[in-house]
Amino acid sequence: MATPKKKVLITGASGTIGTITRKGLAHKYEFSGLNRSPIDDIPNLQASIANFEAIAPAFEGIDTVIHLSAENRDVNSWEGNLQINIKGLRNVFEASRINGVKRVIFASSGSTTLGPQYHLSPYMEIAAGEYDKVPETWDMLDENSPYWPTNLYGVTKAFGEVMARMYASEHGMSMICLRIGALLKGSNRPEMTSHMGGYLSFDDCVQMMDLCLSAPDSLRFDTFDVVSNNKWAVRDNTHAREVLGYNPKDSSDDYTF
Image (cartoon, rainbow, N blue to C red):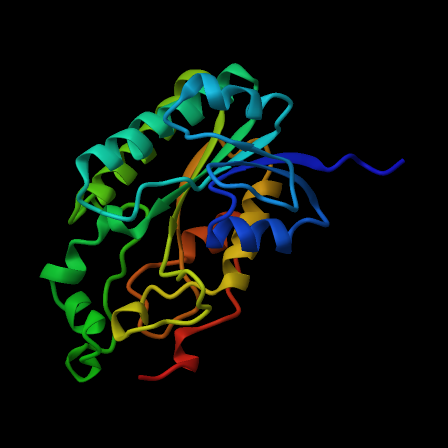
């Protein structure tokens, strides 16, 4: 008898990451959505994550949640970030706990540690494409880098990582935080020089989602930077390679400006 597919709920399922994940991994997992707009190819509950009572039914019988919903239209909107990235995130984590969800994969962001790219060498030179000013080697940002957000969006993503650690330690849930790189809506390529170091291709993103969905239950809490295999990377994939076997196939080196 075939093993039943793991039931996976995706919040923000109509976004770019949600779309490529459910289409790329539909053969392995049974997906459903929690989304404010309709979705045709999977069961979907239409509701805002800011409304706990409205979203709670979506979590019944779910094994894993991929939490992608976020306020990112205005990175410095206090009300938007408060409702979706703080209140909504807590609602998703709490609905997961109440319904016995075993794992939550939280889409965090490189924005949690973005500051050096604007303030320190050689990160700012890499972001500007001034590669002649970059030394042969440099220290990259990783899961141990201090929080250094440059906007409210980054602050709320750091909040989400800290909240995830609390749910892992206090409630015994498996919580995985992914600092997702420059994966752009409607474009599977970097669109400007500043994307070169943090570029993440669609295929590499789907690979990482699959690795997180299939990781052993013993993985209780961790944070991973997720970018493609870029020459001018400022974020280090080593931890994801060692813990999950992440092996990015694509690179921003294939594109020029």
